[in-house]
Image 1 (cartoon, rainbow, N blue to C red):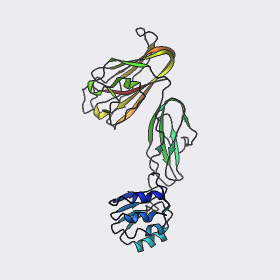
Image 2 (tube, rainbow, N blue to C red):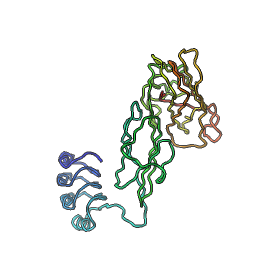
Image 3 (tube, rainbow, N blue to C red):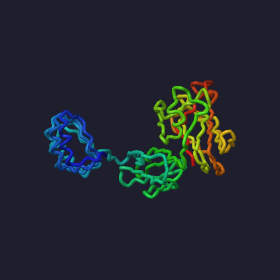
Image 4 (cartoon, rainbow, N blue to C red):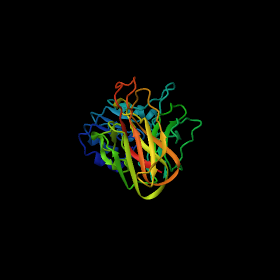
Length: 344
């Protein structure tokens, strides 16, 4: 799927010790495939999903070490392949599965959007490389199905916090796994932030700036410096705005890695007001806790309330005091990991 064209095979042919080359689903037509005959050490060549023809492949018959050619989803028919087998007897041609009884599973849809934080409306960009696939999606975190879920098109605008889930469907195929991704709206960005209580020393990121820098942390990399970790203390952070803003929701993005003792907070509170010492409780939730071990994942908690104009916003998240009895670390204190507070 790289943007390789015919003229660029001349450059590739200069890597004379190359043993494996994957040109599948590129834009080559095969007209310059003879350039690859210079790759005397080539063992495997993938040309699936390209426009190559049998005449192009015959130019590679001089490659003594070539043992595998991958040519599924090309325009070549069985007669073409039989002809190639006769003239390139040492090569195994991988032409894909064509049985009548087996059912193959579709690959997951591909998300092309690089941005995950929405400061202005963006168009959702999804793609699948198999023709005729229907991509069904939801924006509320529910599982998409082939009947009730809307079908993806290129006119879908994202304007607020959403949890995208998308799945590929095609008659005669097993549906794909689910693509799962958060998009976060960020109407207001705090001018500064303070950690009233410090995070643990080994997971301190860039201090309170970590919560308002609009840079997302990643699953499986909680030592990246983009996460704040709290275990000894609860998370208690204050966001300051130079000018009053009218706010109706706050979203805290967290990491949950159950095996790593990183759990959802026991409680999350949002306080606000125009005087730092006179803040009012705006919303409070008690997130559901996991009941079994599971792979690490991101979890966003949105707290909504009646719109309030304020200059000071405080967010409090309390770690689990004792891990549950089913947990390998039962009785130990849990962690809360946060990377961003989104204000809308």
